[in-house]
Image (cartoon, rainbow, N blue to C red; front, top):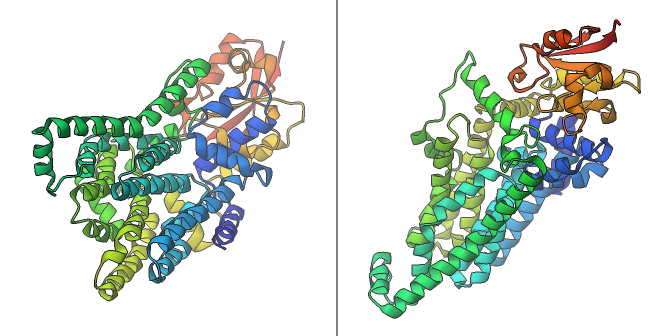
Length: 508
């Protein structure tokens, strides 16, 4: 029922013209793989993030343009299933918390956005949930099998969003506390447990051995996977970091910069995210996380585990100081809070008062989730909420559709030189992608040097285009190419604010 509910909303928004750059990027790369001409192996293997792209490809047989929406709808319904099953198995004979989860998945603006936008947030939330779920299970059972599952979840999380590799950084000191707690000692306080362990040769050997073993189990798989993927990039693209630095490989490289530039240059300038305010914004968005921390107050190492994502987002804000935190980094705290309820809600003695508090906090979160989307620092997130509330056509991609419609009307045997680092929305809306000469093709560089030999038209980014500095096919290209190829003329045949389509005319 949830999946159908999400798909209906997603299809409705799609008919209103709502698209985001992430889903359009997946659509364009999918078209290249199934309809393109030339060597498409690099596109198939090095498009990042990898798992969201493949999930979108799975549903492209239904409809290429709806594939990301279908994937996010079914994926978010799958997240609900994981949470609901875990909650039902641990909180028996009491469906109150399950009803709250159902209510949240139907009406929380953040979850609806996750499910209907076509973005890959749903995969991040699923594997973030599984990672912490298995860690908390390990704390209870002391079975390293759960650490192995947590390691696998961390690998998949990284391949959904590479920035989550920094999350492992904050688990390095935490592993020692986890190992100390797993030792069979009478002393409960961690500092005294550490003192006892280091003063006993047998316990010291056991502590060092177990700590090293957990490090290996938890981190060796993510490290090995990243190394293998970097070597794959080096082999096929001659760049270890191609998948995170090239605009041909990932949509985030230019879009994150554009979001930051648009926000800081806006007339109604908004206060940027400050380090001291990021955690406060998290608590405002998800006050339920305070309840979660309270539930784990008696266990220091478990409470530190819950606090780790706070350190993670603070680090992201410092490491990527020219980027704003997108909605998914706030949504992980909502999932984490629900996970804490799964493990600890039944341990509260006064259930009646606790349920009232949780219910009130959840109601507050409906408003804060809505407020975050409506007043987001990210233009695409504000655009989604405006389209959903106003139910009026979204014009964000109108210009790309306009250019694509003109290209669709060109003769079938004509070819257009296009740089899809910046023009991938236009390529996505083009009916026949075989007409486009794109950078993944070997003849693209030759086409730039002598376009009259390979193409009939050239798509140029104007000086007003925010991405004009990231492509060779900008307003400087035509004057330069006229000098090199003096016997060729270039005629403007179609023009918008950000794009100009030139026809190549031989005058020799």
